[in-house]
Length: 347
Image 1 (tube, rainbow, N blue to C red):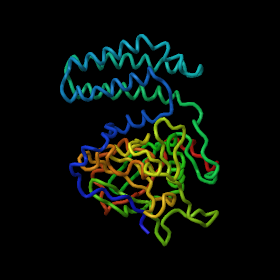
Image 2: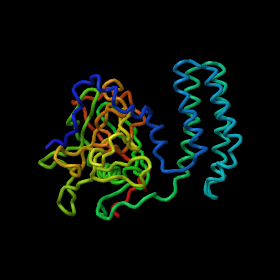
Image 3: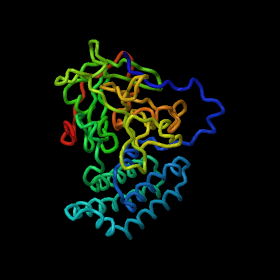
Image 4: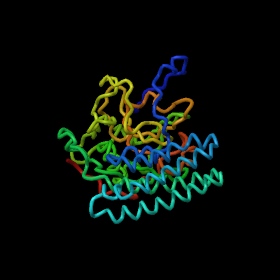
């Protein structure tokens, strides 16, 4: 049995205008920053100010860009001490170093705006946002919620992991997010470490939609647990902003949350999604897909997958390889580069 995805509507008609606008963010690193379980209003305000410069950059409004950067510098200067004090005592020195580095990066960013150099602005902004992201990651404390006891026998990723997916066309790097999809991310990392995906082909490849893999050779559709001799199943797991923990085995329709957006939306090319059958929400075992985000065909927030399938991470590097992959390709191997220590075998 091929684990299936909901098919997109064959065409978008006039009714599209009545649909919710959706999440316009499609940068995977921005999505990952926004998904961190932290409360740091000043630091996150800086992050969002810099991310919001994209519209002015596209329109070449250089005076507005320079003003935005100068205001960000002012915010950092006035709130840096308070920001540092928001970190645990043991991390304050490192946080202070990062924020001082950020101050230098913002000055560089202001210079690129004055020079009206788009490429240099993008590079400098990327560096500043990476520094903010590193500081925000330091603010994550203990895992923020309890996973239901009914799933105690399943592996879970209590944090994040960086993985390398080596395909027949080259390498992809992805960040897998266990803060918001611990059981889905845990199953994936567990199988990657077992070498389960090594040598498996793409079993479904649709232009502008998905690449799917994870179906083992033989009669089984998923991973057979060597201890129980049964196929291991992972529940549908979707977290919504403002909710303390994910919802399990309930779609947004089931919850009556028709305008909700998940913390991990399918709004970036290379979003990692967990497949399940048409018949059940909780029978996903090992098959996953790479969502081929195409703004005109599957716009953010309007793709009919959010709220029906679990996203559990994003490709952050190797997009040129992703563009080349077809049904004739497959996974050579998947390796965990960072974060393996966050995997816990069971509850």
